[in-house]
Length: 247
Image (cartoon, rainbow, N blue to C red; front, side, top):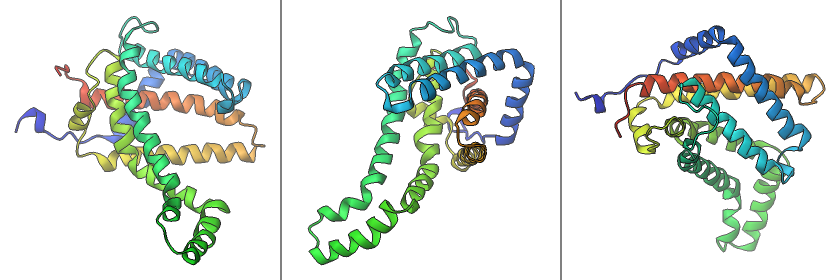
């Protein structure tokens, strides 16, 4: 069997162990990136007020650049902070953003589709009251359903395409097709990683709520966990793409 057709089974726990070892061996570097990450998150969600501010767009650009710089630093691609490869990475990142937003938008508006199908008025009234009002407007049942669907789609629309993004950031092929081919056969392993990340996010959010819902705990722990997740993604990339990319 040729190398191109070989399915590499992603070692979820081994990758976690390697990530932990990297953090322990590079405490100072990891601490600096985590601190900068915290300051950026604080400025974006506390000082600027999050997505409600027009300046948040500028913040997103800065944060994107920071994330690119981390991966270039991890893989030893100089210059770490001022590289034109950041602009090359906009192609796969735009595709990832489009896939995620397209799916989220489709799911968000799906309940309203019957309203435009020309159904009888009495049927539409019943549907509006029994489903839309009860499950979409008045409680979080449908929102929870969207989150579950997105969780199952994460390996397809985010995790695997992220490898193409990382590849482009460090000056290699940013082909989504190449990323899909190299990571095939690992859907449930990527899903497990996504599930753990969601559970951790819920736990951190719950702890912050118990402590007064100020958001500071989420920002503090979130900054560290995001950087830990970035290292995990880098280690995952190492496993699948360590060989020279000739495409």
